[in-house]
Length: 123
Image (cartoon, rainbow, N blue to C red; front, side, top):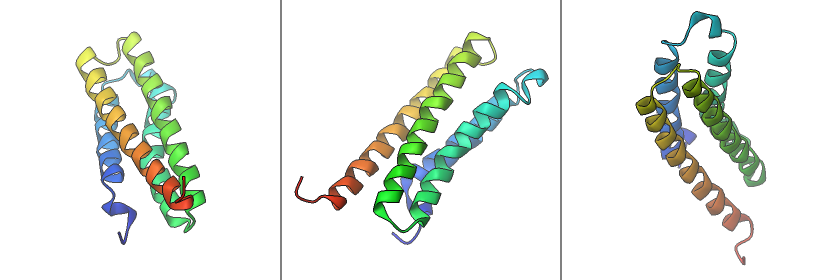
């Protein structure tokens, strides 16, 4: 691959960011600098860390950035569950976003495993 933009996981993560921005439009305005900002930051962190890790040029560093991306997915899901409990998002929206988060998480885990095999081919 010539670019991180060719990675299906990065593409899917970009779609998640746009979905998150759409969902948070309906949040109460008083959450603009609270939960909305936290959710959007966590979502943006996912594709941004995939891209930054790719650009580092080292498999070991790339793995670290992928792990950060995976952590951001867990943070994002936590914020979304809190939003659901506060009645800011519907059950349907939460389930759709959780499904997307799970998919991106699996894809990230697969990429991590692939890169780990590259680092230690005998394991």
